[in-house]
Image 1 (cartoon, helix red, strand yellow):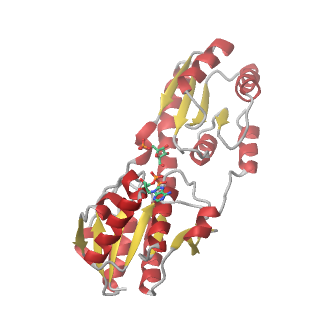
Image 2 (image 1 turned 135 degrees about the horizontal axis):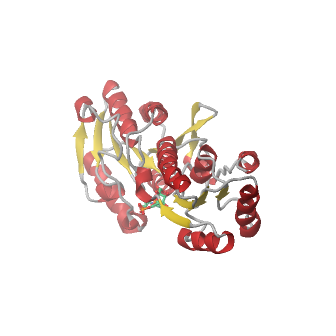
Image 3 (image 1 turned 90 degrees about the vertical axis):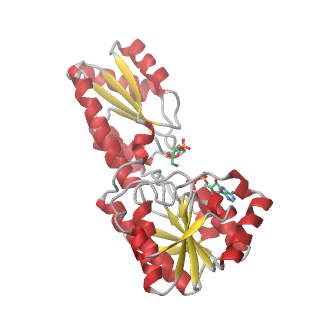
Length: 320
Ligand code: ADP
Ligand code: F6P
């Protein structure tokens, strides 16, 4: 392939810039022309892009967000939207595309590949919810951000003998909640993958630890579970412990990527270009057991990963 495009799509994630940098540098090294497409599939439909070079990706490896901007693009899912995107690729002479995003973006990449535009997808989402991957770009940074924020909340919770109920992101997945919950010593962790009994898993746990002298509590709740204000009110009513709810929100999506996110993003970006350079499309680059692999997009979208039940058990056994 002589000319490729690159875009970031869906919710942004720290480390996307490191992946963009790796793609552009690797492609330039191989003598390819690279278009940076703005705002995900919107830019592809609207022909909004610019040619990138070694220097357009200088000084971005350490920056959160994405220099290409991101978007959710409902129009792209329509036949008309798809036709516009393909027409742009033809007009610009784009032979292949790198798509960085979550599984929604992967479905778009699969549809484009089926219509003759070879795509390689790179997992970029803080949620870590892509079936074929142990790890998605942005997850480690988000986890560390949550940990730092909850540590701060814990300080004031301790000073006031309170219970902090903290909602974290993850869409339908509990990876951020479970792992940050362990790292922050949460008394209870509520995630969508594991059925819970509120009385047994929150109230009784708090009462048990109260008997051993514990007077302040952190409860981590995945966003898919429900309203944290209601949960805090219920805890206060049933335990008598003054409770406050915090929704961490988009702070979890920003900030400088961690070393791990920069490293993984760099390797994934490099592999994506290797594949396109060999004329291979319709692939997802993935990390499994610390190795960079690639899978057919269709197969990747059907792969399932799950929460580590043992990890949940450890969390419950040691946070009392
Ligand atoms: P993420 O990539 O983080 O999962 P979204 O689910 O919002 O985020 O998807 C990002 C974009 O990918 C959507 O706005 C849309 O343009 C495209 N997309 C999502 N689902 C599909 C689909 N089933 N078919 C084609 N394109 C899709
Ligand atoms: O997929 C990333 C994510 O941050 C999810 O954790 C969250 O549910 C969603 O995106 C929030 O999306 P938005 O930024 O559109 O509110």
